[in-house]
Amino acid sequence: MGGKKKQEKSIPKLHVRNKHTGRYDFESLIAALPELSDHVRPNLHGDDSIDFANPESVKILNKALLKLQYSIEGWEIPEGYLCPPIPGRADYIHHMADWLCSHNYGKIPTGDKITCLDIGVGASCIYPIIGQKEYGWSFIASDIDEISMASSQKIADQNPALKGKVAFRLQTEPKDIIYGILTKEERVDLAVCNPPFHASAAEAQKGSLRKVNNLSKEKTKKAKLNFGGQGNELWCEGGEKKFIREMIRQSSKFPESCFWYSSLVSKQSNLNSIYEALDKAQATIVHTIPMGQGNKSSRIVTWTFLTKEQQKDWKNLKWNGRKK
Image (cartoon, rainbow, N blue to C red; front, side):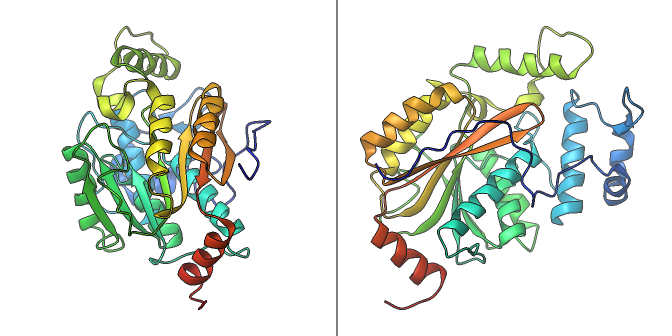
């Protein structure tokens, strides 16, 4: 297999183009969304903050961030659905933009001629929002949950920048990831995925409880249901390792439909199994991009099945409008 599997050595900071570096500017955020003021209070250091253990406060902060930084109006998610950490989601998009840049003569491919497949768009439409705002990309957004799809569709429909730039495709077979979404004839430049992390509902509940207790001063025995998301957003049989391995297997059946497949990988211990699956699938290049926020580390694994000649033709013809 060509290419190197780059391993992270330390937790990096947020990407330099990430709008969310540094402390939150609550004065500007409240000016953009006055209702946020009801949730802002001084923390132990006397700085303005919110209660990050309170799901409603986190949702309102997200709503303000999206309005101020991405000009998104009326962003809402149904109760009980996953409220995404926007800085980390933005980092994924920026790192993949850099990865495309490194394979395009040092220039980031921009505009709606670039199509990104969002596997598991969720109810927040977060990757299409950031990808469109930052780079003008168009999106194919898939999910197995009809409520999630309807929520993201509503967000896209009521924001002119997104309207007509996101094609929503419901995955009707819960065990499928790429089957039923992509066709062999399509040409998608990038696929992004934030896979279900946990391997069971019990494990997901335990993880949500741990998250709440880490954020809250008071210990609780039950995490609020609307803190962490729906079952299919949080867990699947075998957890992220099995999900990504299946994604790799299915992606190998569509080797020319997508230039760069990619997925977040939360557990470093899953990497070797993922690399084994990519070897078996005969990916031509595999690369691992480290990410980090605060004390948390993560990484993106990205791969392609295209030969060097196919990669050259793709970027020349599709990204740069050159003729053969």
